[in-house]
Length: 222
Ligand SMILES: [Mg+2]
Image (cartoon, rainbow, N blue to C red; front, side, top):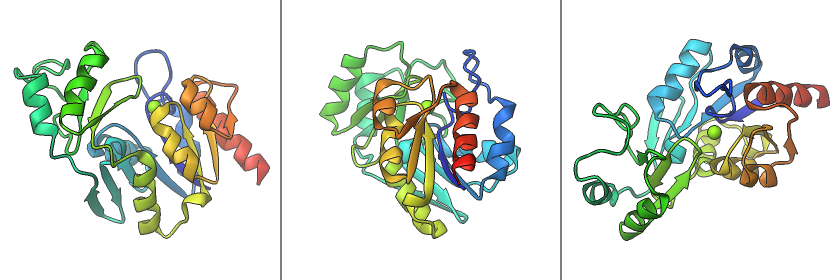
């Protein structure tokens, strides 16, 4: 089975900690291919794969960065980002504290804390030709040319697997693009409306238990 899987809200426990649920390790290790498709940065995706013990294939930064077969690639036009940060947060305070580990290794987009006003983020972003995506964990200010689906296209091509061979599993609006390309898609029980509407199936269980249920249902179906 080839999996295109989101991290936050999909492999996590749902107790507000953001922690991985250890129940996801076995199904991830058992898959033929795992492409981690996340809004987080590549170092997060790489660490996840390393510590679970699977080959690191990733769509990171919501498609701005991809990694497969040992190659990092960047996608989209992020020219407006510097202007956005200078205008929106001249003191560089995007809401994550002074060391800002959320953005420290981010290369193609900027994540703004949900404590900020979405309308205000959107207004400034639009002046720099950028788009705002709410993942439920942050406002991602990014090039409108990138999304997780386009990222999956790049990674799938590198791996020599057609996107239609993937089972996509996720929980939010930024997973809709992978759902559209995958052969079959599952929204976990806690997913937002956009993800639920786009998915072929919605699991009964939520968060990581929903992911485990989706993989089990696909195994049973095959
Ligand atoms: Mg998510």
